[in-house]
Structure formats: structure tokens, C-alpha cells
Amino acid sequence: MSGPMVAARALTKRFGAFVAVDGVDFEIEPGEAFGFLGPNGAGKTSTMRMIGCVSPRTAGELHVLGLDPAHDGPDIRARLGVVPQEDNLDTELTVWDNLMIYGRYFDLPRAEIRERAAELLEFVNLSDRRDSRVDPLSGGMKRRLTIARSLLNRPELLLLDEPTTGLDPQARHLLWDRLYQLKRSGVTLVLTTHYMDEAEQLCDRLVIMDNARIVAEGSPRRLIADNVTREVVEVRLPIEADLDFEAARLKRFGDRIEPLADRVLLYTDDGDATAAAIMSEGFEAGSVLVRRASLEDVFLILTGRSLED
Amino acid sequence: MSTPPVLRIVEREALVFARLWRGIAFSTFVAPALFLGAIGVGLGGLVKAHTGAVDGLTYLDFVAPGLLVASAMQLAASESLWPVLGGVKWMRQFHGVVATPISPGQLYGGFVLWTALRSMLGAAAFLLVAALLGAVPSAWGVLAIPAAGLCSAAFCALLAAYSIKLDSDLSFPMIMRLGVLPLFLFSGTFFPVSQLPSGLRPLALFSPLWHGVELARDATTGTFDVAPVLAHIAVLVACIAVGASFGVRRFSRRLSP
Image 1 (cartoon, chains in turn purple, blue):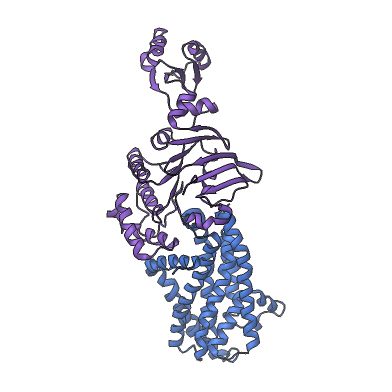
Image 2 (cartoon, helix red, strand yellow; image 1 turned 30 degrees about the vertical axis):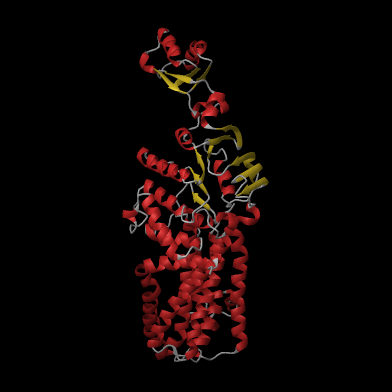
């Protein structure tokens, strides 16, 4: 296919008076890993559901795989893989039966499903659990099974809605590793996340969403370079500290400061120099930390709020 | 060759059934047989001693088709309440289905079709036990199986359409107690509706179960007129049509909002 995998113009979703997605534009190119980053309620999932053809758009234009979801929903869905935010596996059935049944929803021949299911269980490290029921599996295993399930129809486009939310770090890394492999094999990935590190790890390009709109777009590196200084100094304050007073004291050390609940962030191009200056002002060394600027900072600067709010 | 989406849903349900049949066997096969023994043979003996025939039938012959269809209704009702809400809200597997080429309406259609088929499976087992007890005088009796399927589909079409948009199961026990149970007792299942006070008798016309029971009784006894049979079928088909017109829309609104 020559055009973009997904193209949206002024895409809008309303539920009654509530505006979930407010006129967003984006294009997703073949082979890229594209992210929707934003806090809960920003409109990421609503956008994903429109792309997945399980939620009709209210207004605007949307093309997925060159087709219009309003008319070609089943044809598009036949070529998508979907990993939903909440697991919806058949918990009454075994791992293997889950794959067999799901493959049949796509009307794949049984012999072909068996062959792919065996490969995919290998791919997600679940071969030894094929006859186990789904219920007792860990959260990470269920996610991996859901990913295997989403790949049964060899999708051109894989939609992942918060793929690692609720997983422990080890399970997340295993999942990321598999998503990398998929990307390398040419599958276009679209994911939503409210984890900065996930977006930085996986996405070639992303949009930041807030209050139903897209507030920035670009590669993680570009977004940081365009919106934030190179480094950030975090000054952790004792509980009894007067935040406003301390922020005022720190103001002159950074290009820009962001006071948070328990600490103040100073944006600067030379973190070490800034940290040294602050410590000479009497701040304790243990409470001052220098780090590289991240997408978290981009979000904070663009929206004035932190992502975990 | 492609399989219609509705039948792919039936495949899923059949697989779950095949995996879990031991747990389901009791309610599907054994419980109705116990009912037939206790009410048909036990209570039927008393009825015979005191009143003789019921509508020209032995009590066992009278009550067997009633119980057969009533158990189909009960199965349809319980399958269309908790499992439907579970599919959309608790286990959420319906959301997985509609992410594939299968549409919410097709999911609904497959669900109703499967419930009817499963009821027919139960009805077949029931009929076998009844025949062994001598409660099926006519070979037409096999048609009691599709009668049970039709009645089951009518209940499932209506109730699944209702359940899909709920957020909790608070109303379900009420539906079972105030809806399904009275229908079970008063739809010509255990005694002819002519025994009802004359003012209440016309209410039977509104009970899909009564139409199903009458059909099954016509079949097992082998004595029927064509016109009422067609009327009973028409009522049950109308219930399915009304249910479907709501069901397809409500499944779509809930699963693809």
C-alpha cells in the first residue's frame, strides 16, 4: 500500500455533550511505531477505538488501510490486530482454545490456525502453558497471550491500548522486546500509553494528547529538543518546606522552573553547573538530582500538569 | 469456503459447551428427568387416582411436554441474563469478538441461535427420558424439539437484548422470580389454562411459554389442528423478530458506542 496506514482529519468523537476527541489530525506511515501519549481521559482510547472500527466517528475524516471505517469496518478489522486496554480473553477456556476460537472469528481454516498458534505461543514464551486455563495466568502472561491472539490474522496494523499498564517491570521488558521484534518484521504499531519511558522506548513518532486535542507531534527526541532544555535539575524539598518561597529562591538558577507537590524542577542546559550553584546556596546535596530531560517534562511544560494526575 | 459470522459464534459457544459439558450436564439432562419422575409419575399417580384424565390425557402425558418446553425457557432465560452481562462487562469477551470482522449484530444472532440449539439438545434428552417413561404417545413427538428451540429463541432474543445494555445484575433475580417463575407455573405447564380464573385466562396468550408448550403438547400427543399450530409459531417468531430489532441495535450501541 502506498498511502498512509491511518489518516485522520478533524477527527471528532462526542458522547452526547461530552467531547472525547476534538478535531485531531494525524497520519501514521507504514512500518512506523506511532504513539498516543497523554493522561487518562485525554482521548487516546476513543481515538484508538475509532481506528479499530469499534466506535463510529462523530465528525471529520478517517481512513484506515485506505478504507473508510464507516463503510468497510469488517474488511478493515480483518486486517487489524487489537490488544485492548483490559484483557478480554475467554477465561473459561485454555490458552490453546482461546487462539483456536479467535482465529475462527477471522474465518481462518483450522489447520492454519493450529500452525500459527503454535508459532505465536513460541513467540510470546507461552508454549508450555498451552493447555492451561487462562484464569490462573499472571497479568503478564495474559497480555502476552492477548498479543499472540492479535497476531493470528497476520495484521498489517497492530493497535495496542496501554499494553503494559499494570505489569511488573520484568513483564514490561519482555513485552517491549516482543514489540520491537514485530516492528522489525515490518508491522506498523500504534500504541497509547501514559508511560513516558514506554513512549521513548517504542515510538518513532508520537502525538501528545490533552483534553481531547493533540498538543504536540514529533519524534521523542524532537519533542524534547523543541520544548525542553537538555537537562533537568530536581530539587526535592522537605515536607515542612514552603514551596512558593523555595521556588522563588530557586527561580534565578534555571531557564524555567516547575514547582511540583514535593519538589521543584529547574530546566537548564548545564545540569551540573546549576546543581553546584544550588548546593552552594545551602540546599543539601542528597536532595538535588541532575537528569536528562524526558517526555514527561515535555508534557509538563505543554500542559502545566504531570501525566500521572 | 467461508463460514457465516453467526455460525462462527455458534462454534465458539459449542466449544465452550464441549469443554464444560460435565458441569452443565446436570441442569440440561438430569434435572428435567428428576422433574418428570417426581411430578409426572409421582404427582401424576395422585391425579389419576382423584380426577382421572387431564384434557383427555394421562397427567404424565399432559405434563411432559410442559416441562420440556419450560426447561428450555429456563435455560434460555438464565443464559440471556448473567452470561450476556458477563460477556460485555465482567469477562468482556464480547469486546474481543467485535474487534474482529464479526459485528455486534452478528454476535447477537449467533448467541440467540446457539441458545436455541442448546435448548434443543436438552429437549432431545428430555424427550428420550419421557418416551422411556411412556409419556410420548405419538411419533410426531420429535417436533417438540424444534418447538422448544423456537420458544427458547424467543426468550433469548428478548432477554439478551435487554441485558446487553445494563450496568449491573440487580434486576436479574427479580426477572427470574417475578417474570420467569410465574410463566413457568401458569403457562399451561402443570395444569390446563382453563383452570385459571376466567379473567386471567386471556393472559396466557401473552406468555411465549404457553405457545411453546401448546406446540410441544400437540406434537407429543399427535393431535392438533393446523390453524392454532400456525398461530403459536407466528407468535413465537414475532417475539424473535421484536427481540432482534432491539437486540441488533442495542448490541451495537453497547459494544461499538
